[in-house]
Image (tube, rainbow, N blue to C red; front, side, top):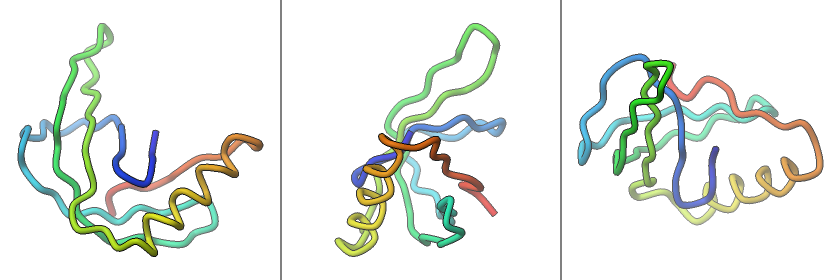
Length: 86
């Protein structure tokens, strides 16, 4: 789940709320957006997976616009984001 301001994702590693992490977000077109995000929430799901919510930190308007454009495509197609971390 991604928007131009943040991202929701699953991660096997335990991340810290308030910490900032580097990311390489690979879009379905294979374009990579390099940036940083701050974890703002974590939820332990019944299946014991950790679900995180994060906001992008210092993302350029150009990259935010790219994400928003791909998000609009997602609403009309079977659209996925891959490889949050490399």
